[in-house]
Amino acid sequence: MRQPQNTLLSAFLAWERQTPQQIFLRQVGSDGVRSWSYKEAGDEMRRLAAALNAQKFPPGAHIAILSRNCAHWVLADLAIMMAGHVTVPVDPALDAQSVHAILSHADVKAIFLGPASERISRDTTRGSIARISFPSVAEAGGLTWDNCVAQYAPIPASTPAESSCATIMYNATVKGAMFSHAALSFSGTHVAEGLRLQPGLRFCCHLPLSSAEGRLFGELAPVCAGGTLCFGDTQAKVLHHEHPSVFVANADTFAAMRQSVLKSWSETRLRQLLRVPGVEVFMKEHIRKKLGLHRAFVVICAGGPAPSGLPEWFAELGIDLRESFGTLESGGYSHANFRLIRNGTIGQPWPWVEVRLDKSNALQVRHPGLMSGYYNDPAATAEVLTADGFLRTGFRGAVDPQGFVTLAVNSGIPPSVSALEVNQN
Image (cartoon, rainbow, N blue to C red; front, side):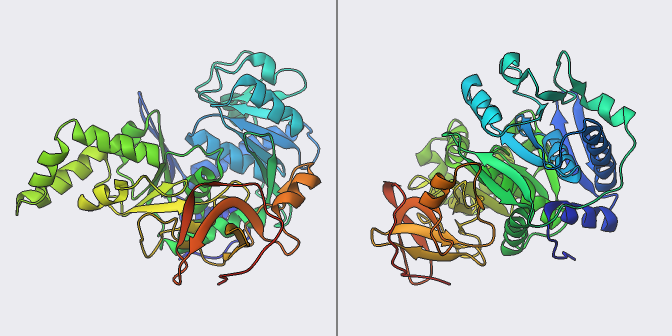
């Protein structure tokens, strides 16, 4: 039974107590699969937290993670929280100059270096920034993950204050959105409840954990739901090995999956086969297995509305492609087709999300999971957060009587300063 928690870490600790032997993390690699139970993950986090404490960082120090998605990313994030520090996720796809700008702006004291960090010049992370290498990274100098886990005894678990800063997530313009521990827990808990997720489900998210929606669907909701988080060297490898119950990706990924199917059958031939009694059922199941989605009951296309026709194509295979939308500043938590589905829209507001449009039909949202502001940038904060606490998303749209939002084409706009409420739940 899911119990309400006030922080992501307290949610993990509750599942660790209730289901210590349940698998929390799985990492699919070329040499096989490594798994961590909730108990094993908790022990490893406590040892990493002890290693961080030994570095004598000031309380609330900013500690970065530069890595593609993997099990160690999640362990590092929760260990940083356990040690009382703030996580700064950094997208490994960024160039060295952008990475350096983020590390400097955030005044990062230490950085975890994982897969895909190797291409970033080591000069970017040298100097006063302490380095901790994931096991898969050959890093000269600094601390190594395995040494930290081996040398330090686990510390007693403690949870941070709800109102304290948990993370600073950066966009491409080097603006860092600050989120409290309570905000992360709020969003993760309500996505889990909105999707009716149960403990033990397998999750696979193809969005970067350094992004807002990637973090929401790839870490926050699974932890709050007591799930198993699955990672792999490639998306195809983890899909075909783990058979997830929940799969999240962007429209480009789903378009590529469609093309992979059409390499075997033309569009015309496929449609013919899907209309032959008896053959139809076999074909649908065969293609779902080919895609690795035959056990997925929640499939989310994140990042806004999918290209026209794509959700309908997947629907013919018996896969409901649920379009969702959330900006960095909303923590990825805004709208989704989470219960009712209306293709071509970003869905209805998640629970507790208030929605309104301004005079130019610019979408504004308000909920407890919003960022508290941009780090060290009150002027930019004032541009996107209204005096009454609504976030100016920068997208225009329309809201129908059921609350479904349709975004305007090319709707990215500067934040507006006037507001006219037209819909609020």
